[in-house]
Length: 376
Image (cartoon, rainbow, N blue to C red; front, side, top):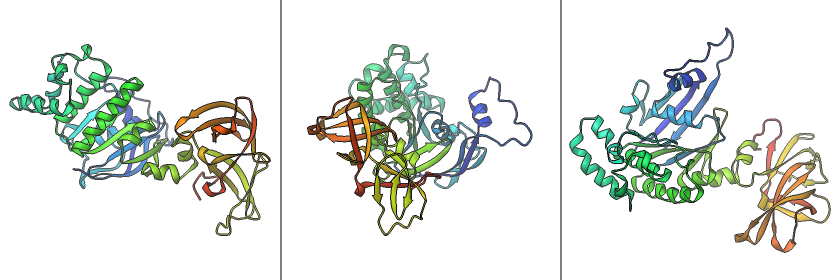
């Protein structure tokens, strides 16, 4: 197993373009004095022996660039990446011992699945090992995989191509698994089935892994820890429970978890938080000396919002989503404070169009500095 560490890694947009446009035009040079723009901007991250690290974030935040930098497919502008304390600068991608599964699977269309799975050994002039390795991998991949070996990628479904891509990755016997949104092209049912299969393989091999996705369900199901990315930087790293229960910032609070955390802006007056837009006043407790007049953003998850008959945050119900396992309903409201979500008991009989009041549970509040967005 391998420990991967990234130290102050930066990758400029020019280097991303250089890696992606081998035969295309590069961006024009920056004007004199213009600041360099980065796809990755000061990344520090440790991926431990045998864990699967999820890289989660919106489109364009740098997730795939981070994975490609770890693989050596994108040159670093600054910083260091190490595998077990060995600096990977100058080590070619093919010499790093990584197995990669891309979003489009990247199978060779003119080769059968058998040839795709054995391609790494063929490239290394180890053809004699291919039959045994393909048999081993077929056994690991499970029922029905052998039937795919004689087919070309064009004859396979999306799920079948994904299985072959994973098998090719395993056949390399890699030190590191890298997954770049491998399930995004599958329909919902097949995505769940394939996720189960991937989890089984990850548990079997316990190889250090990096799993890039924008899907929180995938990250929760497959990853030991998750790094939340935003605009080329890592906002927070931790177990899913930590990200959900103690988000480091309003960005993490509203990105991780469903529905997003409700946020309300207000101000501290005599150690009482007062909403800017509603009749809502919450004592902060004597242990929180936040300063008179300080602007504080209060956060509360939907399951920690309750209906009130007077005061609170009043709004009109615009959407209802059943939560059968909790005998509850997710009610989305339009209010002066913006769109809000509250998980309410079915017994309340809330209907679309109703005007109701809701308030956060004082025992489950999150406080953030309004200006910086950071947790207090």
